[in-house]
Structure formats: C-alpha cells, structure tokens
Length: 192
Image (cartoon, rainbow, N blue to C red; front, top):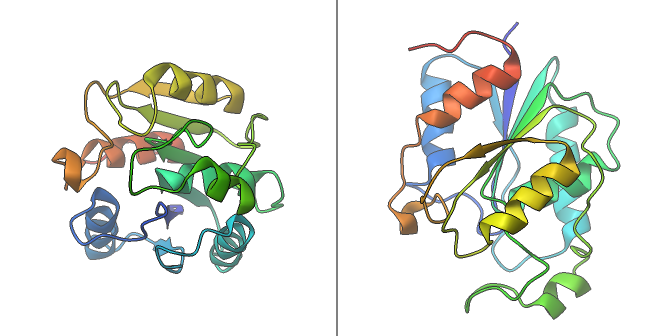
C-alpha cells in the first residue's frame, strides 16, 4: 500500500505555482493518496493551532503516512512530532527557515515568533525517518544552520545547491526531485 503524502505548507499556505501545490496535483492525477493541512491564512501565527491542524490531517489518514513540509511547515512538523502518537513512515523537510535569527522584511519578527509559540525550535531527534533538503543560498536560513537542524533532528541531509528558498520567488515551480525523495522515504522504488 502506497503511503499517503501529507502536504504541510509554510506560513504563507499554498501558492498556485509552488512545488508543493504542483506535486499534490501530480500525485492526485496519478491516483496516489495525498492529503494536505487545511489553510490557516497568512496572518495566523499561532504555532499550537498550526500543530493541531497537522494532527487533524494526519489522524484523518488511514494507513502509512509520509509528511512533505516546506519552510515554516518543517518547523511545524518538528513541533508536531514532539506531541503526536501518529506513526509516520518518513518526512521530507525542504528548506526549513531559521526562526531563531532575524528574518528578512515581510516575515515575522523574532518577538512575533516567540509570542506565537514557535521558539525555541525543537532540537530533539524526530521519531521517524526524515530528509532535510537544504539550499546553499536560502535567504531564510544559512546553510550551516540548516545542517545543525538536520543533525539535531537525526535527519539525512540532502544538499540541493544554490536554490534560494525553493519557491516561485527563487524560480521554482516544479521540483521533480521531491518525488524521488518521497519514494526513498516510502521505501518504494522511484518511478520514472
């Protein structure tokens, strides 16, 4: 049985040409089981509410589950992993931001993130297999900080090279490599 892929978007929720949105459409078109965390809106910063949304979505899935998170969704998934009892086959955590350092203009401040329950970012090993896909030039996280997170979480690190924040603003819509990484986590051979 193929695992259900649970899409966990970042703080800005689903974006039309984002690789997660396109991945979800491709998986559905191929008849693969896929689910996504309900949108919370761009202004809802409450970490606990976002973690509860992951829990609801994960508990609604019967059978094996692979998490596919991007950006702030990676941090949400790390917080969620500390409290859930839901079995997870694996997690692809792409371009996690560094919420413990000031972010560029237009993103939440450290004070806002702290007040909303994001800090400190969990540093305990995740209770499931995981891959952190890291960019060398991510404007939201220095590569060395992403490496530290991957080590703390017990994740396999995949160096993506210079891909910015792996989002439309960085020139990414489709990200075909995501499917191969998901298949690796699912323990199934990658499909062409």
